[in-house]
Image 1 (spheres, helix red, strand yellow):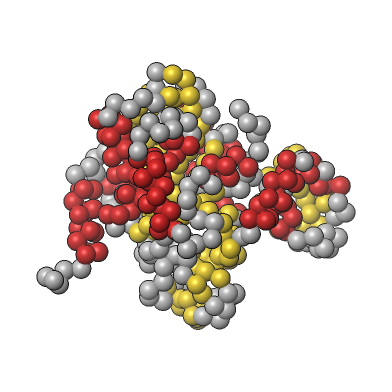
Image 2 (image 1 turned 90 degrees about the horizontal axis):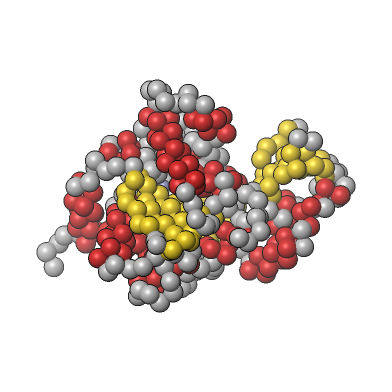
Amino acid sequence: MDGTDPAETHRSMIAVEIEEDRQLDRVLGQRLGSLEGPTLICVGSLHGNEPAGTLAFQKVLRKLEEQNLAIRGEFLGLLGNRAAYKAHQRFMIHDLNRYWLPHRIQASLAGELDNSSSPEDIELHELRLELAEIFDRRRGRIFFLDLHTTSGGGQPFAVMSDTLRNRSFAMEFPVPVIVGLEEELEGTLSEYLGRLGAVTMGFEGGQHEELSSVDLCEAAIWIALETSGILAADSAPEPEIGRKILARLCQDLPRVFEIRLRHPIREGDGFKMEPGFKSFEKIHKGQLLARDRSGDCHAKENGRILMPLYQEQGEDGYFEIRRFSPFWLGVSRALREAHIDRVVHWLPGVRRHPDSKDALVINRHVARFYSLQLFHLLGFRRHRSVGDRLLMIRQQRDLPEE
Ligand SMILES: [Zn+2]
């Protein structure tokens, strides 16, 4: 033993790999199949301090080219927040994965962001133009894989907006799937692309600086290539190797979790996580998790912790999660396939929003007997409360299979 910490060695190795390509273009690379087929868009480093997804995409593309593997459709990678990637930080001024809000997209469409001096305005605008071109030349369904890593350690996992088509895709990855996160976060790129009709999934591939995070993101990309049908089944060993790597790491974890609580961080509240937490670690009600100016932050219930924050930038301190029973997933599929969502406004205290057929207005006094869970199962998410009224909007529509 020479006394060096293997984790430290890994970290310096990833640093060397990254240093070489800080000047990357927006399009990391692309491969076009001779046959029609789906498109898989991988985005790496939407948070600039998360290099693993970007490196993993480059590795997969290189292997596809070296082995001259035949694909259908299109496979490409985009660099998320270029400016922040060059600066080694999560974002410059605004979190680019909370920035895809309707008014800003409108501004981009109207050309108002062309000369913006805000770094993330420019990032959003350039990315949107690139994505629009990809959608224009599509020759099949579009899949979006958003590659991230976390500041704390823990097993890899998938995050999805809970539509049936996203679910079918996400369940092909042998990692825990987290539902309900999208309800807590506004303005994610996944949400934007989902609304444009893409099948979307976020993948969290371990800790930011670990070299193994590149391998985990690589595994996810190979599985996505095969699951989407871009790479024919069994035409390469990598997807199966990837499944084995992920399955081994996650074998002791339940298949699906739901978000129970998000601990938000506000500017200047001095949030500090207690040391040593990792994603999926079990926590018990009342356990001390973090401290801030207003005092100690204790776990609200028995469950597990997700994404404890051990970095300066970020608006989420940690999440509390709990196992979500596959039984309810089945119920939810049945309800949606029976289109119960179309008649849910017949319930007392529930009505359709006058301006949108995808929104429900719920009178909490009248409708307090059925829980929010019912609406979640039907594919609606909480949008906002106004007095005793709650507005819920449908997540990306469950489009018919193409
Ligand atoms: Zn991230």
